[in-house]
Image (cartoon, rainbow, N blue to C red; front, top):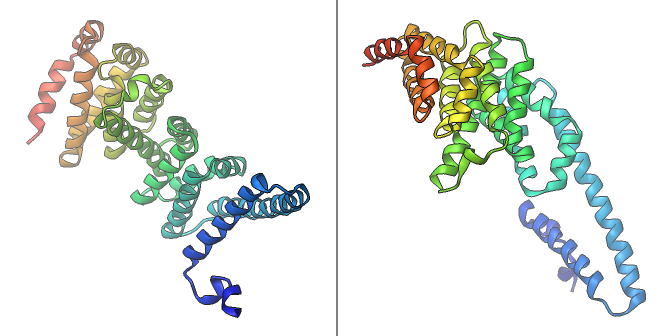
Length: 297
């Protein structure tokens, strides 16, 4: 009989199985509260279950807050990555945990830890997608804003903006590949265009990865969207794109991806938009494209 009363933890069960069993027990107790017929018993079980759930919620909230606080401490990249992964995994499962994270100041903490590890690609990706879990496409907008507020020309600022650009491109491409409407219906698209343009032109010596990511993200945002293409050009995007092509050409082999992405962005801008095409032609873009094409192997 004693074996029937042992907890799974005391019998050496794996932690995952134990926690799943505890969650199942909480669910069963909650279900009992709505189905018991005896009012006195229903009231007692309900009160005890409410207290238990309140205690569990408090412990969960404290754990999330401690993870966010830990994220703000300087740590090696591998440890910082684990913290970001844990927060994203938790946030994907629960809406209330996302609220707790935001309340604890996780958004600025994510950007800061990304800036502190500009060469850790997996960490940069994890941070970007954590922000997407927290706010959808608005998360990428916020990440670009955070990067814009950082020191211009710093590797951290460029890494944050680069990560946001690539995440924007990856999300848009994934949606389009699955037959969804994609960025054509994103209400944040115009702001993304302006923030990505700012990322391209705000640094004295932007990295090839930053320019490459921005050009690819801008292409999926402006493709078959002449109004957005016009917005990009009206905000000075024509000059920024020419500068990006020149920078890619000057970089030699490392800049080839920038040249290809820049030329594809140029194509997206002019297709179906005669006014943009005329403006770019007046700036000598055709000559630049020929020169860039000759630079490619």
